[in-house]
Length: 494
Image 1 (cartoon, one colour):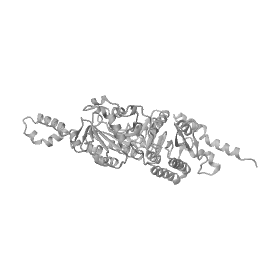
Image 2 (cartoon, one colour):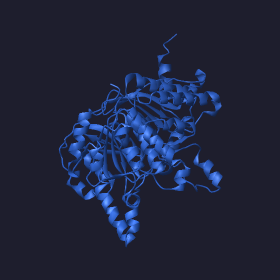
Image 3 (tube, one colour):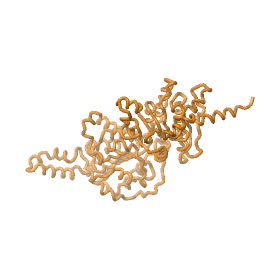
């Protein structure tokens, strides 16, 4: 009997082609690459090493009908940095997840954890493989359980490059970061068609679209205009993330650590974009913003200071002077993610407390505030806060309080720090004087200015040791560089 090598190699070659010609053409017509094309576009050339090509939950003679179980998986490098990767193949049974498919995903995730490197998931699937019944559902449960167990050990990034509905969406959102592409990404508990049916109007809601997930539900952190842009964004993101909890990358820093920022003088007591503050603090404007479209009242970004990654939570006062429910949820999630990955935190504070809204009250703004407090208090990474213009009431307590474990708290001289805003505080503290004055309106104005100048300024907080220093805004970068250097940044579990 002759060697069976030719037969085996021919079978493998057949599997590597994925779905049939018509399925591949349909994928391209939808503006999407195939699973294998995506892997090759992400990884350095000729570095992909595939695993479990022959995996199958069916009989051997049925293998060819489900090439690679609808999942391309293995490892390679990105910019010379090792990663593990899996990519759902929509050209094979619509990328549906079955038992063997789920086992491949789990195998890759476990290998990534054992080697201490990131795992990247490319999601493009119709969901559970119905023919496999409960085994398909259990496959999702295993992936979810493992993804949860690996939180904080290695970075997990999901690229939603097609449908990602139901259990798939839940599994994807366990990832640390989710990226998507306009027009082709969809993510939600149910398909957009289901919600259209409920509304009774075709394409009336836009629910589950990439834009909706970015701005309304917050399921996708960054949306790009094309797959190529998304892949470029992924590579940029990875440069900010550790390979594991014990391996934080450090980039070369060519920016002056003692660089002054004269523009910050104009930001005191005036409207400004906090993104300008963030970018000017960072090394050479190195900023990767997450969840930009979701809750504009808070900005969450990864930046570099002296080459090291820092997570920034910042109030966007020009959008909202108060803390909104959605903004606090966004901040809490970001803080927890940074803490899990050993990324130090910088908080830029400028708010006048919780939003005064009956709707927010009904939907749990107090609970969101409690979650934010817990996120800060439980975070073990280095934490630095800078009060820009306002830290009023609960806004100070939940974001800038040393008692929540903030290591260093600084303030610009323009800051107002008090239990209530200056107007309300003056009405309480100087109620008698205002009431007895000949002109209550003028008196209220006078006492408001008096309270702001003598009671609400940061000197009182500094006298109590609650602020470590009141700094000249121009010197913001050197002060923050020194603070993080002194704290040693955070280098994960090691």
